[in-house]
Image (cartoon, rainbow, N blue to C red; front, side, top):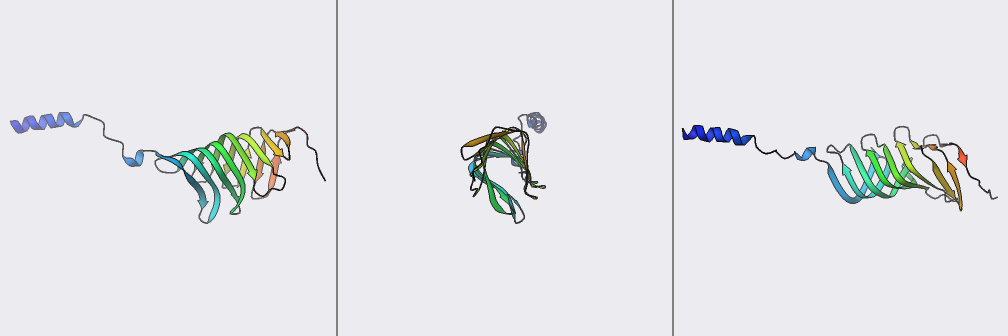
Length: 170
């Protein structure tokens, strides 16, 4: 009889409380660090960040406070990037930068920089898209461009509608 009561109480109490979520199902939160997007031996991008959250399987992530970011062309540093927020896909190496986004070409004699609020990188096609208005700064001059597309594979750059004026120097 005592065994039956013990068994009954055990069955009743077994359903109480929620079991903890297995560690594999929880996002990974990181504070300060460096993340890279590499495909075998070819570098795609690298970011220093303030905080990051990776999905439980590590296939996607949200990175906040990106600074000292680098976009590579043919495996060599080509542009720097800083952004408030970046969403990355670690499988495809695609990323989307949001908020205040600043991009500068490395070793550019004209010191050109680009400011916008949305940048999309598609690694498979090596395309950098700035679909929202962009401000291009060079030697104290600023142009507003409706959108910019940069094809790293073909070295083609497409500018949308341009507003502003530029003084050319010889």
